[in-house]
Image (tube, rainbow, N blue to C red; front, side):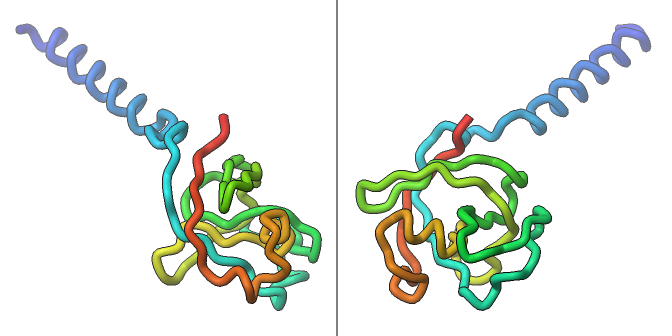
Length: 126
């Protein structure tokens, strides 16, 4: 093998690895089961990590790694809603999502105190 051929193979491998690492995650279309909690109402008026001001009627979720604006379908007790990632978190426990108070109400729960931490099914919406 010549130096040029070896170099071309190296470039091809690096390009392939870069494509694999930046591709849509494998779980993008797969349903997952995770824990979700709710934001406290004491955070109203604060800016989210995505730059939006959190208000009483703001519908959205916080997730640690999904990009701002990513849409996720979240299901709880036969109710499914498409929600947008607007913030980062949660940062404690094994929860994957924090839902805003308005998002919690979409699932028929009157406030964040009665939501607590619940198991939800979710997947990324393309």
